[in-house]
Image 1: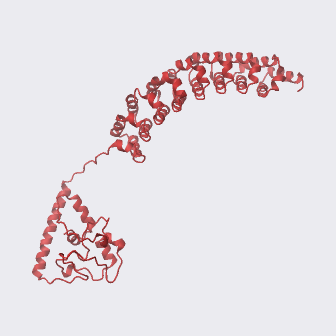
Image 2 (image 1 turned 135 degrees about the vertical axis):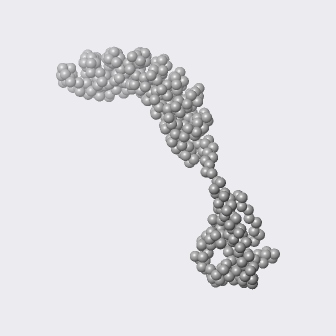
Image 3 (image 1 turned 90 degrees about the horizontal axis):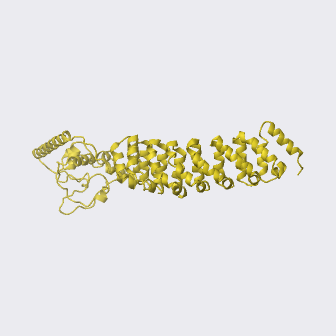
Length: 442
């Protein structure tokens, strides 16, 4: 019946299948199983399993419906698109395997059935009435169908996937509040997931400020755990880089008493570094008490020294006075340390004038020791370069040293200090050159 409808309506069986699938009210009798799916090329095709095009109407053949004795590929393609890839003109054309005995399946070419004109007209009228009824039902179904919103897929099923997770990120970037709400409800689990963290990073980077605040509130009490998590630390780092201090402040307040623990952690040190690098004085001021309490240990740490340098650079001198005081107390040892010397140089470059003079006085007291050390010699050069007020003081100490200026220039690292002293302009430079020329030759 489906094949007859498709022929009369000039539709392909594929089109009829679409109509039938979208019209549940229509029902068709099941065609007998002929076991020819593989032979007719119907396996895996969108066409429902039906007999071959020349044997479907095996009950009655009228001259008007008779298929040509030599079918062409064009005709076959227009009638059965699924056959087009495998149809090749042949003589005789492809004949299906033998059908079950109870079905009078004709051979090729089918022999026309002798029928009176009245019987043919009656059959055609009945078929036309059926077609009109089906068309009316189909039109009614189409008119009654109302466009409904497609059900939203489960967001969390896609967030943790590599490909579909990007669709969720695009929805977040587009301001879809429903998707953002679904992500925030499971933020605790997603933050620790390999791919789920990317959805929270999208919230941090592209969502509104209200959603960012909601994320901070949802994860309140878990920021320390996330800061030392292999996946969660990346989301915390991005939050410190992108958001403003109003969003960062609650997070930094939760982490401030664990600064030394973060610095020594293989993942947490990245979070501490981002805090010191991007946060403003208001947020960094929360870290200063603990930083001052453990200044010596932090300055000797490969990661902690960078944190202290950023804090000294970004905070005003009034806030860092306790921290710098703790550093100056341990300056002789820090100046000779592979990492601590960078912290002392940072004090010389960004500290107040009082702090610079404090470093300069310590350099003059230990000048020979500093000039003979690989790391401390850098501190002496920093004083001469960044603290012009103390350069004259260092030159006087060099000229009054027990090993003389020529002796300092003969040291492995002291010669770099003397070269830096010669770059000083003014009367002190002339005195320095005279001392070098009048000294003993090496």
